[in-house]
Length: 113
Image 1 (cartoon, rainbow, N blue to C red):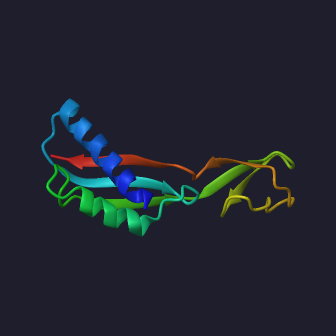
Image 2 (image 1 turned 60 degrees about the horizontal axis):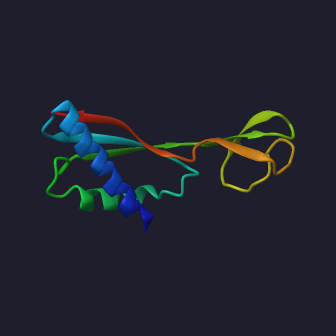
């Protein structure tokens, strides 16, 4: 379950931000998770709660915003929605799609004290 290591990395980012910005507590964390990122939101919630126990983010509310997949079809030169990797272009049926959105995870926002 790679969500555990991702949750650990999120906590490291939070702790680093706390040192540089001098806050003492995190009330909420907003993550953006792309539909094509291979990150399971429910697993991420579970791992986040486990990882932040006894930390500056203990008890923090986790909000997950799922972003849709999007790609550029080189065959028809259009931006198209992508529901899953390796699917054909919904417009022309070609398989030459470069993913442009929805394949990443990022910390979008922290609410701190």
